[in-house]
Each structure stands twice: as structure tokens, then as C-alpha cells.
Amino acid sequence: MRLLQAPPAAAAAMLAVLLTGCASGSTDGANTPCADLNVSIGETSKDLSAVAISRGKISNFNVPFWVPGGVKARSALEDRQTRKIEGLETELATKRQERASRCQRP
Image (cartoon, rainbow, N blue to C red; front, side):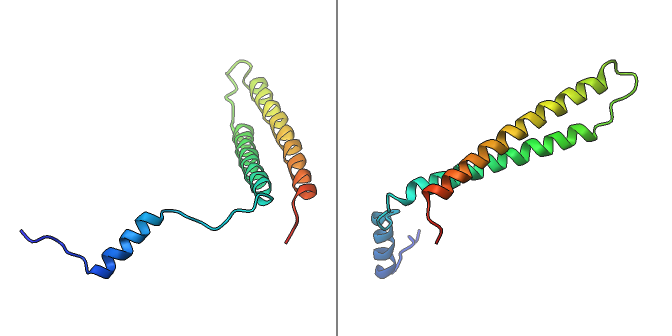
């Protein structure tokens, strides 16, 4: 049986990479809150998009005429999704305003 042998330079390079790990340069403490705000804004935007898509699916759903209270239930679901969207939009506006006041634009 023949063992795989790497050239010494490749083995040394691999060892150096493994020992170094994911070392990165120094992190600036001022950028951390801005990065956190950006992540938070992105997550809120994703949630907002998901709720808007869900509301669109609900509003496009054709309720059969024979389902008692079906149209009323659909409108109640649409209203609930609309309230969620309005809340997320308010939250997003607040986060954007906080980012504008706290973080500098390059």
C-alpha cells in the first residue's frame, strides 16, 4: 500500500494555515454597533418581505362560495398581516434612523 506524501513545502503551508486559523486583523469597536444595526435592518427587511408575500398569497386565495365565513376569515387574515407589515415598517424606519444618527457614511 502506498501512502500519499505531500511535498515538504505544501505540508508546511497546510500546517501554517491550520495553526493560524481564522485570525483576522484588528476589529474597530466603532464599526461593531453599525454592523449589528445593518444585520438587524436586514433581518427586519426579510421578515417584512415574508409577511408581504404571505399577505399577497392570502388575498389571491379564492374562497369557495359554500364555505361559511370564508371571505370574512380571509379579510381578517389580511388585516392581521397588514398590521404586522405596518409594525415592521415602523421598526425598520426606527432602525434606519438610529443607523443614520450613529454611523458615518463612507
